[in-house]
Image 1 (cartoon, rainbow, N blue to C red):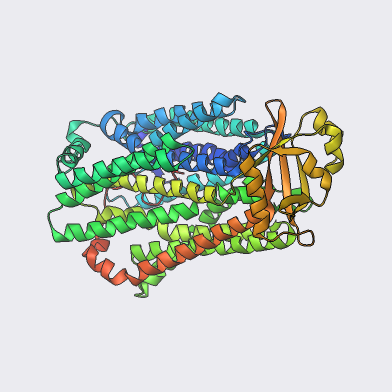
Image 2 (image 1 turned 180 degrees about the vertical axis):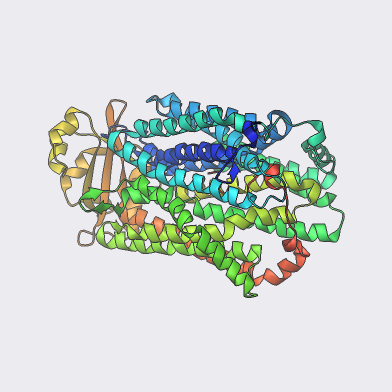
Length: 626
């Protein structure tokens, strides 16, 4: 009696290796999304809170979040190259998994150095694991195997189950026991995923092996060839030099923070522009050049979509924490729980949305990929209408109902299910054959740029901090506090907030409680001027005063903080949400209006069948590299 080798064994009609990859990815996504759900909230939490965090202001936290999510995507480019050229997918996933174990583990350490070190390790780990594990799923099936689509559907269920459960469990642990316990739980999840993968490698010996020279396509163009041509073409070289000079000049002269980071960022974009110009100049036929123009528009759609959608882990997460009434039956729902809505909605509505678009196509109605992408942008943008309503309710009542976030995430997910699954497939159909693999790298770069745009938008929605320092004794401050246990606040040097009404009197600021103006001093002279200007902007008077919050945190042996003019901040958020809505709707409508000429420029590329895309190291339906 013969026994099948492990890699040929099947379970429930699919290769056993599928379930190894399913649980590996489930736990990897558990660790990643669990950490993502609490990351921004941890950066915001005051140093002297009961649950202490980094004590950063909202703008800085959102900026770091944007950099981080961008780098996660961009790291997938070298991760894919390393797998394709050096290690193979199987070893790359193993290396990525151990990097993630280390990264999540380091984040659970309560030391300042551990934060950036942990994020760096996670970026590198996701870059090595994420673009390669789905390639292995595709490799489990022979070309033309009818089970492949079902196999990927099973695999993607694991992704979203892991993401949905993580936001709830990690969010609860972080709220009840502390941020680092939450990060620790995410680390445990990653360890479990890695153990599954190590155990199951015997079922995966035939996929993702180290590449040989014979596996390279004769049609592929190497990066060396691209860069050689880029720097030897006069027009392209001139553009690169001008953009490179601008990339250095603008941050050095117009930016006060993150100068070095933006110089590197702009130089990276310069190389991308040079790369795209070189590819266009190398195309030989009019059909290829026409398709390439549509390809560029597709990249722009990707940037716009993720620039708005990725407010989820940043700005919307903060809004849930600070301005949403999360009380339900006497229990306050942790803000991180709302991050589970998107993957839960994907599980619920993924199939119905796919069936709807198939029904539209069967009816002979418009259902092209670019149309779906445009509609997805519009629907996702309309989700921010609910956040506009939320800001109006907050302005009137002092808090926003939680159902606004529930509805917003619902439309965001419907938009994602319309746009994201077809985007990569469509881009692959448009890409010139010899540049197909490299275009996947550009796709990840565009997605990363969208995430950075999301961070920039979120950062711009936050008022410039008006920094202050406590200039009074505990006895002077206690009568102004509404919190209980005021004695313990100062005995333990804990954070506190003073709520008051402020207005302008005789050209200077004043409070409804005159003692408040005596307890603090401004860190800078311009801060006082800015405070008065914000009050003047609303013509605040003693009869029509504005709510302000004086938020104090105990750092470096003293109380420092900032004054928040509540209406000013609310109006910034209102304009941000309304602006995202208007821009996304107008952008999507313009794409639809240009649909006919755009479809002509594709020259029938929509009908091309793409086989073996998974073997290239990229995913058709999984946008969840985040």
